[in-house]
Amino acid sequence: MLYQEVKEYLGSDWIAFQELFRKSLHSEMLLLNRINAYMLEHPGKQLRPLLALLTGRAVSGVCNDKVLRCAVAAELLHSATLLHDDVADDSPTRRGVATIMSLYSPTVSVLVGDFWLSRGIDLILMKCDNQVISYYSNCLADLAEGEMLQLEKASSLDTTEEDYNTIIFCKTASLFRASMMSTAYSADASAAQMKAIESYSFHLGMAFQMMDDIFDYSPRLNTGKPVGVDILEKKYTLPFFGFLHNAPHEISSEFVERLRLLEANSGEEEKQAFSREAIALVEQYKGLDYAYDRLEQEIDKAVTSLSVLDDSPAREYLVAFARYMSVREH
Image (cartoon, rainbow, N blue to C red):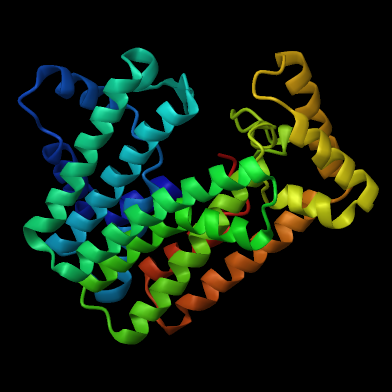
């Protein structure tokens, strides 16, 4: 599997990342240490630090202390946002594992998220300069603005594709960009290398979220994630835009009007029937084809961005991760 292969390639740098990651979470509070240990036992894919370390290698051939700190900060910030998201979404599980919110309480989940966020910021402040700090501070603002825009548009039901692009940049691609731009800068990348990494991280992050949105309309993929959730939350995503583009106006407008009338407290059977209908309409009117076309465009742009970097195993793994976006199953 690609993730394991990259970890083996990174070798001592990956070991150093893990050690710094664990060390950064130490606390004198027994409850906090117990919760942190639980989370460390279920770490997820850790894609962002992998990409961050690969960036350091691709730019300079090595990962210095500042690169390692940026990689750890990226994972700490990402995990913090998930802890907060679990509360906002009232999620009992994530990746098939019980959330901190369900094991303890929403308050505990928010507080642990705050702790992880503060430790990520501390790591950067200790050794990195203001430019690195700005990458992450801008990212945190983007995350908040993306969530607010998504809530606003779910309420008004007038999301455009431009809005969608803004939302997925803020909520997903922004952290990809901060993770990789901070390590490229910390590895003393040239102006041309910085521009390449900025473009790559943007398009890769966009592709990552587009594939997640495709999953929500793809029950046959058996990803383990629930499907048909986005439409019940009145979120317009790329497959749904494909349906809106391709379906006759009377069909799409009638469905949107019914969506407008769907209440959050509607019966579970009614909501599931509506969700199944949305999935069927997206399939009937080639919404997934529309989404896959856009996804491939983003992947191609990400790969093309790397052409200015010197050939190296790290560069080839960055290319491989971009290509992986369209075939990953979770």
